[in-house]
Image 1 (tube, helix red, strand yellow):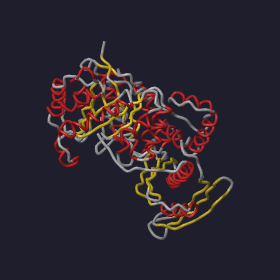
Image 2 (cartoon, rainbow, N blue to C red):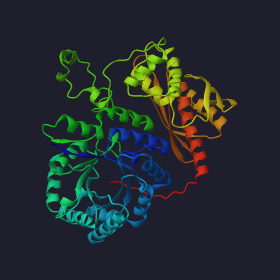
Image 3 (cartoon, rainbow, N blue to C red):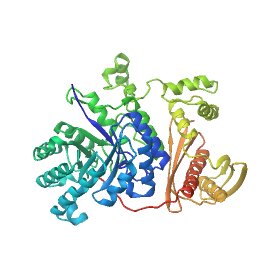
Image 4 (cartoon, rainbow, N blue to C red):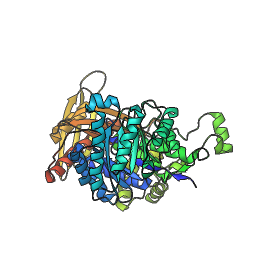
Length: 519
């Protein structure tokens, strides 16, 4: 029987440290629920001491997500560890994950500590964590650039102090597989108490080798892979969960291991993360990219028609991608729409179906065909996490290569109707200035992107904006066949997040502590 490899998902911690990937509490909870459906073994929910918001998110996940282990990250000091425990102690299966760097580069330039001081700090930190929590993981940051004998001594001390999981990170993505695997094998041989702990790998993708290094680590004795959905994370990202899991599933002939991941949930997890962060995977991304199961070349198509095994090493259904092409039009009814959503894995209640049907009929009036990509956008744009405090009732803009661009908007807030107009450097800028006049919340646009989520000249356009309000960044998103309409509603989505956060903070005042962490 094959050995199990545990999947430690750090999308909500290391992944969220990726620029532009910040999520609010509600969005983190939605992603955590999807990770639970994916059946990951461990969710690293965040870095509780980083801010009050991060603490609240970790605590909420610990309370509401009951199946996986919930881990909180902490540097190897009392303040971090006690704060992490406070956040996760209500979890059914809590874990404190504490770390300190062990490479001479980090000791000299970052920590400014001696090897002896770090060794002593490791023992003290793990003992403290173990007195609070039965499940303690220790990470040696920048392990692959550490002296192997010193690293072995630190890891032995961590095990003796009570750590049951030992992580050997390739923090800066420096290792290559034929080096990392033997390094781990030699390291384990130098640790007398190695039988008392599970060993883990945490690989970054700076050289594009994070998944390959993770598989090499598994072959060398690691039984936990730390990874993220879509491979998001610091710099070039982390090992991609979907790629590592499907490599283990597809190549059991040479990798005799298994995971408990429900692989049919992989595509949904990938799409949800894209929607929450606005960071899309490239079309040729392995496993979850738009072209991962697309075949255009005539030779490939001929082979596929004869037998899919000629050009597919895994089925699209195995990762939750439907093989059929959906064609829905304006004459389709609610029953047909519900049935298709169920085929795609979405179960809608009556109110959600009615809202989705409203957006569907609007779209079907403007398009000849509605595709599955359109329906995903309808679900993600039409059924919102943040309440619609302001609603867009009407937008009109005018612009061109000559003359001044202008825009007029009509917004609704409760029973009140607001109408404003403005001029700007372009129709979208003018539209945003008009919205600012209504809301009294002027924002600074940091990033704007529009993506076609389906085919044809009448494709549905999905707009993502990153906007700064009062020194904080927010993501807004919306979809429409009209880009001005989508742009206005995306901006308004960000505005509603600001107001929603202000209302929540008014009930629970924010107290933040500045710090940062990485593995």
